[in-house]
Length: 311
Image (cartoon, rainbow, N blue to C red; front, side):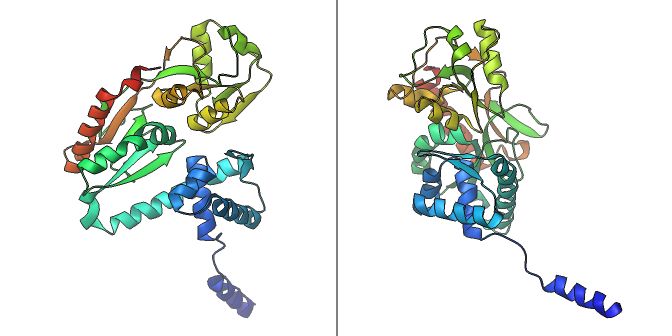
């Protein structure tokens, strides 16, 4: 009996970790975080088909479907929604520990926490100006669908829709957030009451948005035939562009699509959201050069941006 126990311990010691291929995990994490195989391909420097192939390999390894696919977008399945936060957190921890091993570079690298819709629809198109003015600062974006509170363990600053203002942190108000429905121009709506028979696209981490707007519009007993739930505002806008229903936006993030005629605002009512957008950082770091430079630049961008009042 003692010999058998000793052999079993040796087998356990020699067993390899049961980990999926790193390339497949990287492709899955990028596609889930960005909500798009195309955007994941751009970030990783590979083709869209390569991202799709790596995700497929991961699904085969796990024997579970992680995405629901159609011609233009990829949505996480329930299994994918469960798996993604764990993979993302593991990648964040690896990245944070890697940065911790390079303390000499900390003043030249600025890691920004930003909601994925804000990153794609507002911040990224403007970052070239910051990089031009501060070429020695390397910018890293930490994008998320789910995190609202500032994550000081892994980032330097945040551009967040703050639900809670935590002790030991510095918050500076930025632009106000308004709830505004948007839809494809092909979808004809004459009054908010039409929403009773129209598919609503909601973000399942903020399902209260629609009810807040409907209450303000005086529309009761809304029982649409069905709803489409997604995990980010950018996906809800993309679904609206395709004519899948009416989406809710919470800032100026549909402005460009409206300008291009891809979306319209069917009703003039704007309802103040219960949370607004803030610049955030650890209070102890607010005077650091790289933090102060980005804060000042961000405030100037906000002041000069006419689209913030466009919706």
